Length: 230
Length: 230
DNA sequence: TGTTCCAAAATTTGATCACAAAATTTTCCC
DNA sequence: GGGAAAATTTTGTGATCAAATTTTGGAACA
Image 1: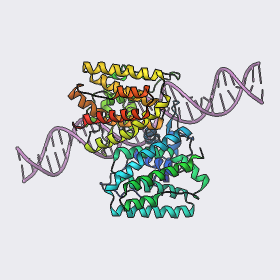
Image 2: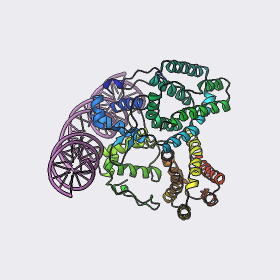
Image 3: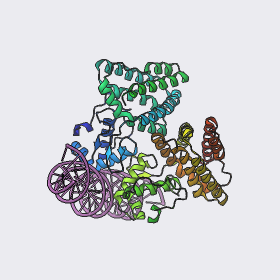
Image 4: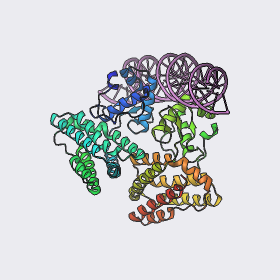
């Protein structure tokens, strides 16, 4: 990872800034960079992480890195062992089952909460993202696929406007991000399936039950796919 | 808050240390102290929090306080405004509903997950805690009640041994802790109801459905009680 | 060859400080 | 007096460093 990683391109951009652009602090930028790398990049599960190591690569002082790492650790994205050492969390069967269950409980709920607020433009946006995902799948673009999949889910979830729950789900995604990236890196994007088209149809039809089923199934399939690689 | 708050007495102690006692770092101690205060103490919702202010009262340098505050902010226990300022989160109707929903989704699930692992000693422990709660209720001991209620729920949830989910639930509890403390402080402990006895009976009977109902209802009642004070 | 112990290196932690940003107070002008 | 602007104070941020802790590398020994 180099300094340039801090300003990563955004094929699937966030909702554009509405508030006045406030200059980001260094620890905030570093947090975003590390978060991106955990969700989409090549951070290896189990690998140790040091403040000095990250600071050297990002060409900043250890202090803002320390802030960012502390925050990511609190979010479960990094693992703090009793030894004061920090590492990328490894996946275990137990943790896998817990993440699976949590996603199955929270994510369909977020989707259903979003449904009453969904507008036509939202559906168009989701269709765009899903089309981009299909391109990534054809090209074998693993990182693009992961970015797209994340963008699809959270574009939908954010419509629910539930700060509390979405924060929990973000935390869970960061916990399996590095492992999922590892699996996809080995296995490639072939044979990847999702329920995005079904979800979009359910949104169009304002069919709450079908939407819940689609997201439930999407989570189930995605997690089942990577479950064999633990 | 004074330096002494760091070493708070534990009427409802955690499971005793099994690993070798490693000397806690300052930021860890401070984190625990602030966490206790958020869950049981008198931190007022909406009140601003400053690093120097906390550091002065705790008689430590601002650095470990900074670490602890960063962690609590990441956990949602403190609120970071764009202004770089931090405060105790205020309760809103929206946040209240989200917390209510999250608790209703996750906590009964944790209880049911715990059920197969529950041993006779666990049930005895829960009964002890519930008895202590009754004493607090009679005496109008608000902090004692809140400590007891937290101890009861998490003693049960920890039996599920689900690190991922319990971390999320801890985070949610810290988000309504200060507000609940405020309400109880105003209203007192009279007319407080719970479903702890029902939960204990369900545990004894290994009745999964009854346990789920008891925890669901306990969460619903507790949240309903404070809902009017927003 | 494998194990234990000790020295060296690397790392986190906590303190201190300068700087930047924000909030607060004061001043000034109408 | 009331409101805008400027000065002051407060506060978070980031850099640097010493101390404490942990890991690592190697020597000594069986």
